[in-house]
Image 1 (cartoon, rainbow, N blue to C red):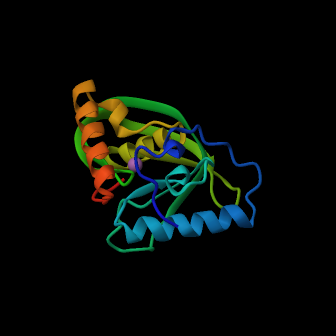
Image 2 (spheres, helix red, strand yellow; image 1 turned 135 degrees about the vertical axis):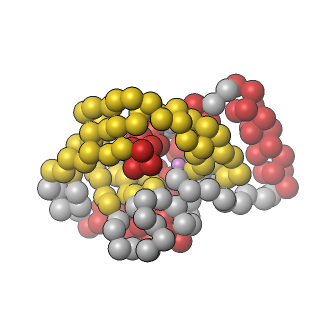
Length: 173
Ligand code: NI
């Protein structure tokens, strides 16, 4: 399983809600965790590994690999307050970082991998991470939060790299 990178069209797809948490979804979750830790990421959305399903995984204490993998299926933001700015990167947008303003506090609902309802209260990095991953499920990337100029420059850079057949990774979310 590999991480899909911009401009892969899967990253622009609206992910589908999960109806049955079956073996396929369990395997997807296991693989997402593995891929995320291998890439030293703190969050990953299912469409980043080619599965347009509403599943995200995250672990902001990723240095202790595998200890605290959080899984959120069909996440919904029920409350979002205040603002925070943070320099974000994305595993699917290699070699790009920029300051992005998000909500500082978040309440999110969803279910875990056993189908049990969960409520998460998040702030700061965790809130940023969850918003970033939910953006992925809606086909949105960090590039959509930055200026046209920066987006166009990145597009040109990627076009050039793709002509050379290069495609590296280097960021966190
Ligand atoms: Ni990302």
